[in-house]
Length: 366
Image: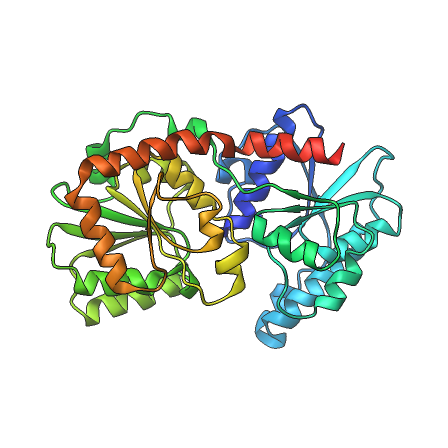
């Protein structure tokens, strides 16, 4: 921490939100070398209303090229777990963690522990269940995740989807100024994807659409992704002479809301290639998209339909290029409909703030 990955932002926002509700919050993380030199508060643009405690455990990722990433991750987790096991927690204290190993270690010390679940594992399920068998409660990011836990015998469960910082999206934006800053065309319609360029996120669908789309006034903009992934997709774009694709790379979190507001359509094209995409995910960008006031084009998956529907978004058949292109045409041929959907999304997203999530969890824990 900090990390470019979404889980880091989610953790920081939850710490901030718990503190805003009057809780005393301490974030406990391992001390590791990090190419990101900003501190957590500046990087994620969160209030300095919680403490950060770094545990000194050996950084096995320094040996990654010799022992491989899987072993490095395992040894790193083991070292951190050992250090956490030595922590003193006040008798009225509560620990919330995304690590099942931490649950097992702290429950041995009779500490109240809640597991923040964002998926059900595809492998090593019995070990996973064993580590969580004495957990005080499970906080699930989606109904799909909760159903998986219930089906495996867990009882004390709260469904609490991810959220959005609504105040960031209420700020006025000079769209021309932002477009000029990021060298985006002023005379084109922008279809924007924000996030990592993973396969299951549906990036390939967007790239294929850029190849096939007939409307020359449309441009596809990608925000985010690792350097390696960006280079890969830039290569594909160059090979296919795609002049309607722009990669902005990593953008500061403080700028994301402004960028999203410059779009004409925001894309959430998840593919149903695993259960995480189909059932478990609660994409932070989905709530940010809704708060932006821009129409959302999203995959028709059960994980997405927990929040989006035909009244607040345009849904297309996941991993179906033809339907994706058809829905793009519908959006630009019916501007009033698009405005209607985005207005409803702005209303619906109000219940998905980080503060509301924090209140639900505090009530559940108490």
